[in-house]
Structure formats: C-alpha cells, structure tokens
Image 1 (tube, helix red, strand yellow):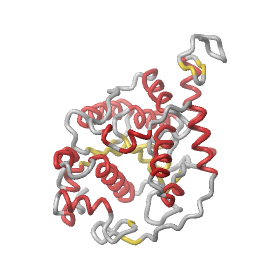
Image 2: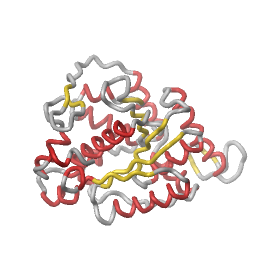
Image 3: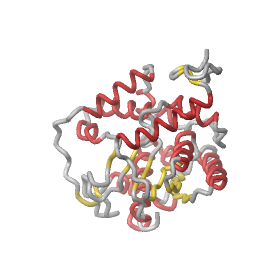
Image 4: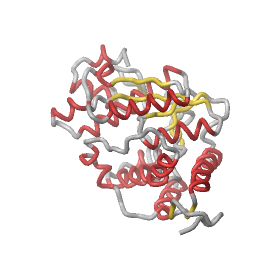
Length: 294
C-alpha cells in the first residue's frame, strides 16, 4: 500500500498517506476546521483541557504549531494508577514544549475523589466525573480569563455523544452539540471549541505515535461502566463524518431550559443547585466550603 501523493509506503489506509503527508493532513484538517467554523482568533489566549492522553497532547502540539498561545489546564480526579501516570506524561510534554500547565484537583474542590465515588457504588462514577470535570474546567477558564477553552473531542467522541443524546431523547442537549458552545451563545460560559471533530480516534492515535509524544495509551479503569462505552459503533470514518456533519446542519425545534445561577457556586445552571454541587453535597457533605477553593 503506497501513499496516493508520493508513492512512499503508506502508514494510514483512510486516507492512504505516508508518514509525512499523513501528519501534514492531520494538521491541515485542524487548521481548516478552525477556519470553517470560526473557532479561534490568532491573538486569543487559549486553555486546552489536557489529560496527558493522545488527544489533548496532540491538540496542544498542533495549536502551538499553528501559532496559537496555548496553556494546559488539567483535572486530577484522583484515580490511582491511571491519572497520576497521565499527569506525569503531561508534565513531561509541557516542560519540553514550554507550555504553562495548571492542575486542579477534585479532592481539593469537592472533598472527595472519583475513586471514593466508585467505591461508594451508589452511582456510575463516569457520571459524576464528567460533571465535576466540566465544572472545574469552566470555573478555571472563567477565573483566568481565557478567550476559549479547547477540548480534544474527536469524531468518535462526537458521534457517541450524538447517539447518547438521541437514545436518551435529550433534544435540548442535542441541539447544543456544535463545534462551538458557550461564549456568546450562552452567557456565563467560556467559549468551548472542538478542533478535532473531523479527525477519528485512530487518526489522532497514529499522529501521536508518529510524533513520538510521551503518552501511555491506557484507558480509565471505569470507562466500560459508562453509557458512552455502549455507543461505540462500527462505522467507517466517512460514515461517522457524514453523520456528524448532517447533525450540525440540522435545525432543532426545541425549547431551551432557562438558565439561572447555582445558589452554591454561582455558575449558570438550569436548576437552583447545579449537578456538580449536588454530587459534591452527596459525596462530601461540605460543598459551600470546598467550592471556594478549586
């Protein structure tokens, strides 16, 4: 199998490209996605939601290469044997690249860890983890005054989210699933952008391998417990891309839930107490104090 451009040995089947042209294609796809959806501006200060995994590490590298001012923002959920390793990888990478890194610990913010939530066995830990991660990233992005928060959600992630929201009939959430959320669209949220939406998980994994990033290719020990795990469907790259782009073009006649402010943390919420604070109250019992110290 040879590259369709230069006839060198191909490293990828879809698209069929050699190493040099594949890495160029990945970077160009990100640049085109940013331009097409007007995700970022050149002079913005951008926080990248970083974990030390292949997606966020590749995103940090590519955005920096494209000339953006990026900083890494990481959440330590407190999962021993997993997050401690990925954060060490992230520290190594950011030090090599001269990228500022800030780590926020769930234990300091909410008085407990995802490990303890899992051990309590009252709820699937992925549900709490996702809520707390999003809330802590949002608080940090607002507090530091970033112009945008970039996440490493890839094509597979987006298709899984699409199917999850369809399965749960969450039409208002489905309507908000776009390349840009927050910012101008919903007052009180930092602009969130997804530059990887047209790249598959395999594309990004291969890119990170070819670039020799210091990444351990491991998954969270709880990943199989979440509903998202069941939404991994065997579609081709082009089929997933067609499905997602069709969703982006679709108009949804849905009624938005009115946003108020959480009476505990003060951030936007559709309820008087947001899900993040409700979970904290359930598992830590001391939300008001912990919320002041992210």
